[in-house]
Amino acid sequence: MKILRSLLVAPVLASALVACRTHERLMFDVHRLEPGKVRLEDVATAHQKDLAAQGAHKVEYQRYWVDESSGTIFCLATAPSAEAASAVHREAHGLVADEIHEVVPGILPARASGRSQLFMDTHRAGAGVRAEDVADAHRKDLATQAAHGVRFLDYWVDERNGTIHCLAEAPNAQALVETHRKAHGLLPETVVPVVEGR
Image (tube, rainbow, N blue to C red; front, top):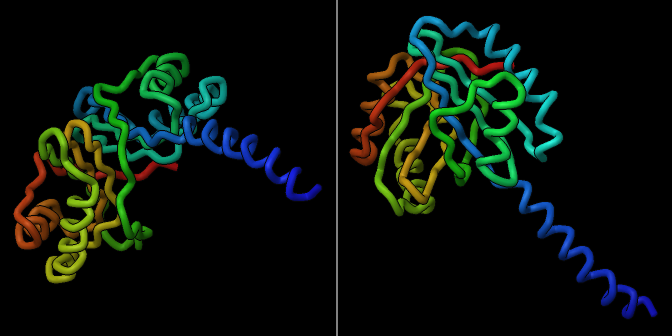
């Protein structure tokens, strides 16, 4: 009887797990607003509005980072689709992202120490980049970073269009670039200082 019950329950559990996974696609979006016009406290207020609106769309905004000087905001969320993630921003405050990427999370994430400035860099590696190749490059970064006073914390890969975002602590942007240069030669298109929101 127990075996029969298990056979009957297993397909139901499998279907439930598949349904859950459809709501767990990881999205990384980028907002580019007017340089010098973005304040961290205003972004925090907008984030709270996202949190209030996200449930109706089965979205969960998890983390965000802000560069006030360039007016750039990066957001990380789980969502059933890019459209659902955008709908939350649209309904919450109207600030829809300029880019939204479905991403693969990086390997070996680390916590920020709080002792150095955070930076977010952006690589445009071209369509068809593979997460496993980026993981190999990341391992080379980790092996090289100490010589430049850098700590890579996390990264996210859009395999479809080749966009990669790396989060790191560093004494300055050039130290981060030099770490990439020495490790594998794959240099970022942009590097901006960021503050992680709360």
